[in-house]
Image (tube, rainbow, N blue to C red):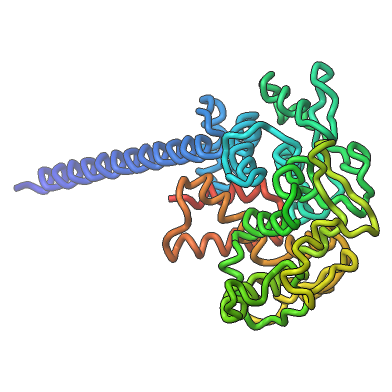
Length: 392
């Protein structure tokens, strides 16, 4: 073969190789673009629950191409459906004992939605004098004795993202500022958890909804029983071992904390939360004959005895006092714990990823997002974006 022929052959081969490389590069870029767009759509659907527009997809795809997945996901939180559907469905089960999503919009749920929209530090959710109402003159006025304002807003499909406004429980319901304890003292929470009973339900459901722990998982028989109330028998069925091995495990920690709610009650006749400063509600003294030497509640002082023992794993903020008075300071004790922060992230993970974290990689992501949540001034809206970007 002549030198010219060999040269032509080599050139042809080089050209063919160049074309092949170019085609491979185009294919790779096309696949990357398709993957980015698919990820954008998945994240938007998971956060907003509705399909994005092409323009929104374009914006998100560009950000994903720049390695800014969380920023891309954050754009989905601008959709009104994120507030009226995703957040409402997340928070509504927290407002009733049945933990049902099929409940009317209420002040508890509206306050969660508003706090997320406005990036209000979520670690104040159990302590702040805060309330969100709907700014719409066609609605009934907000009332301490009914839920008509919120129920009508939902029936009218009011845009919660646009219409929710921040106010205070003290200004709207007449609660003293010091007695306003965020979500715990909303009308919905009072109607569900402060009605009848012994007020332990409000504490228990706060633990369940915001710490992701029910009483069984914080069971600790090593705490002293001296602040367990009189209504708890020390010998259920005539057997003191039941108390020592079971009852004490919940009540020794719960009763000193639930004492913070001693001045509250939900009045069924008036259908409103009643706060009587300085007067321990009669429900704290029911069934006093069950154990006469038991603790008699004198005031609303509380103590966190889970700061020691096995429940130190809940990650208490040791820079804060372990004692105080009233629901607000007790709520702040809970909401500044590691368990509170992780619980919010776990709930968002389940909402956005459509499953609970179930692998080592999932739990690593939860840990990372929890740390970011605490470091970012408890911005729960950002948790949705970070979680959507992490879902597989």
